[in-house]
Length: 271
Image (cartoon, rainbow, N blue to C red; front, side):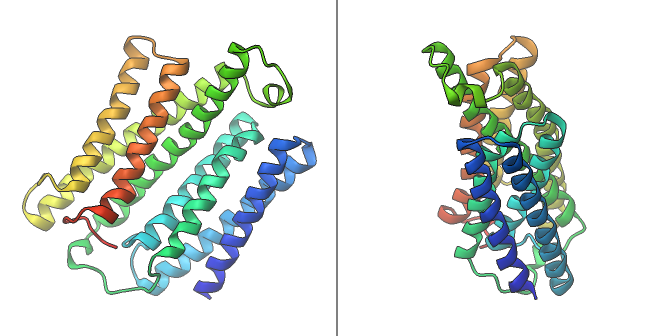
């Protein structure tokens, strides 16, 4: 059942991605509705897959790269659907949904077998710490999508290329607002994830902070987004500068999440 739900999730996400990309080419209302319903269906099946794996494993299914990538994708889709409902900007899905699909597809490259839980992970903090971290990652992913759209739209305006693509994209003000909203959601969640991780580390390893590669890069990620939030609140950073830093932050985040696990060893290396 677990394998079937995973395959079905991947198939529906692929269909939703194709539909959103088709909407980007030809933004018709019916395509927008089909895209949204497909993504919602995929999200429901993905939730079922996650719950089924939880019941089989007996713990939060987020303890290896296969499970983590799947949960990351789930968080992105769930948060994006909330943003689409609030802002009614279907075309944002053309930039976010492919990322969610690629992350989910990437999970197939890692072992999916349910293994005994590492002793260090047997804690009440597991679900809280990891879910907060991935929800923050999801918020920053949506911000990344909005930032890419912002730079494209600004290019059209700067070069006075007000053609079909320009007409399809939201205004710069709306895209900048989405970027900011994602930051105000993601940054507190990331902060809580780091603090809860430090508390968990003290109980598991006897120290709050050991400068493990994952801890170090998590702190770097935090500083990047802290700089962006500080700039917005104190010096009025908006527009292109904020969009570029949101993109930089997303790539730092990807390395923190994936690169550290693949290329560095440490206490957090659970592949």
